[in-house]
Image (cartoon, rainbow, N blue to C red):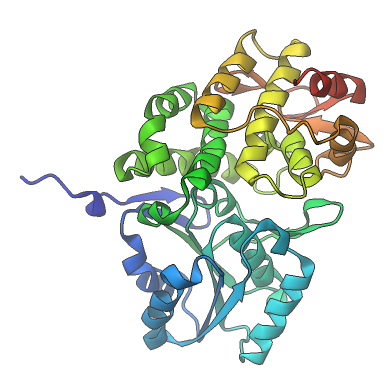
Length: 369
């Protein structure tokens, strides 16, 4: 019997109210899966200026026999994930004749997924959205879990809504068109999944790094599938982040702060990589994590080719101040998701996040050099 080709080895992950399909070449079946999961009179495809020439026109042509279509394009980059863009997109959709019988299709990376998801959550008080992620970070993180939103001057994702997709369609072949730096950045979220839930997965990622950075399909398919499984399992147990889902914030409290203070000059995954190293050090300093946990995280992050320290140009006081505006702050105290070791996270009588005082955080920031 002939072994199935990589194209035939697609995976389906149950994410609770929706499914996540992962495969190689899946984009050639996007229209069929979209129509099955979210049938509509009109399909509004939202993409960015980088992805449009690669995949948007083909998808529009495939959707055209199934209903009216419209294309809505945002400039690429985190700086365009704003309320102004949300308003422009919703106005465009109204001008195009979109109504409650519209399905929004998010075709792109995490910025597109977050922004298009928020458009869908609020347009006509909520229409269906299908996530078609084209970056590694979007496939394993942003498209899973139903979080949508936009950034504000005060910080990332401070305005948004929970709005699960009808289906997520992840074609790992699209990752071949990513710059290598973006594949490296996406691996930060995969490593995070290993730290918070699966030490064996963390070890496999470390072993497969050359193949993953190169975008080899077999290794990438396994990586995306396992990360989706981990995130889906955590999210379905806590859909609105009131409990265990908080463990997925590991690396993101300080990571978001570093990203914001950099003016989004850092890729999200680069900032998360820095945040994971800093927060692992914080966990060790507090006696929460086993000794050597931070060193292990830093070693693998460095092997991926991601930064382990914030740029020297960023002020510690600014980074600390930015954490105060994070969604995870409670009563003026910033809460952190901290590991006890690779594959396990700390919990307390208050749940899965631990409040940490400014002095301790500043000590870790000052020791980063």
